[in-house]
Structure formats: C-alpha cells, structure tokens
Amino acid sequence: MVKNKLKKFSQINAFSNVVQPEIKFPESNTAYKGKWNSDFFRNDYPIILEIGCGKGEYTVGLARTYPEHNFIGIDIKGDRIWKGAKDALEEGIYNAAFLRIQAERINYFFEPNEVSGIWITFPDPQPRGSRMKKRLTSPQFLKRYQDILKPDSLIHLKTDNKELFEFTLDIIQAEGHMLIFSSYDLYNERKIPEPLLLDIQTYYENMYLDKGIPIKYLSFKLKTTEA
Image (cartoon, rainbow, N blue to C red; front, side, top):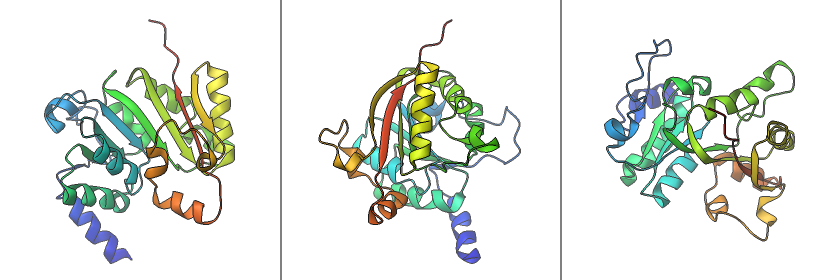
C-alpha cells in the first residue's frame, strides 16, 4: 500500500496538469493566482472548481462534457488526485487541472472574480462542535468562496449526509443566500436541473447508492456583498 502511494506521488510530480506548491509557502509563491487563464490554460474560458475533489471524477467528467470551460479539482491527497489527473492526460482533456492544497488555502491561489462556479461533492461532513468550521459549506468557507467567485456564480453540494445537507440549507437561509434547487433524494426526482447530476458519479457516490442511501443535492448563489 505504501509502495503504491509513493509510486503515485512520484508520477504526479511529472504530471503537467497538477500544481503542487510547497506545504509551507509564502504568499508570493502562488504563480497562477490571477493568471490561471493566461498562464496555465491559455484561454479565456470560465474557471470552475471542485473542492475536495477526491479521485476527480467530477472534475474530469465536467471537463469532458464542457470543453469551453476550465475545471480545477482541489484536494490535499495526492494519491487521490493521481487518478483524475492520469485519466485526463490519457484522454487528452486539457481543460482539467488539479491543485494539491488544503481547501483553507484557496484564497492564496485565486483572485477576486477569477472563479465562475464551485462543486462540492461528497465532502467530509465533519462532526458537530469545534470542527463545524471545517465544513466546506460553513460560513467561514462561504466567505472564502465569496472572495474569489464572480457574482451570481453557482455553488453545488452533493452529499449522502443528511446532517451536512440540512446544515447547509440552514446556513443559506440564515445568511440570506439564494437557494436554487434542493433534493433529499436526487435519483428519485422527476425534474433534474442538470443531467450530469446523475450521469457523473464519484467513487463514494456509487458506494452509497449500492447501500441504498439517498443522495442529497442542492445549488445556491451567494448574496451580493455591498461595496
């Protein structure tokens, strides 16, 4: 197991679609901040993030389907990123990239208005108490997103965890954000806002579906901040 992980770490060091800054980096060591379009993707397409991307199924699947958008999967686990990065390179999907950082560091790597949407797929729900701030839909994280997102950008959450789902619904209401769509059982919905919600499935999603656990989904927009 350890040998296999080391092999993956070695390989992603050579992957052209993976950005791996040093764990302890100065703010100046964020070469692509504000320059993802010009210096990395070399196009003007909108940039969409998948935060906590795991094996990158959504990052690659979305990039495959929407070639006129750029997608960046963000995760700290290099052995997980390896799978999505490898698949993208092998398929010649050059509008998919991966950034190996902790999600808390996201604002070091993107300028205001540089991002056009965010996907959060099956994140760690984090237990109640002191770790609630680490939930990827906590007010602390929504503030980080607000600092880099363009106005009216969609944020998507897909999860098996009812507590995280309801926590997010409560935050959206309490903070005055705009809920666009929500479902406690996505696969039994009659009207799906986006077909890819069912067409692209993550490793964990397949596992939960096999166990008969309903998949929850919601999308929302952050409220506009006053200048």
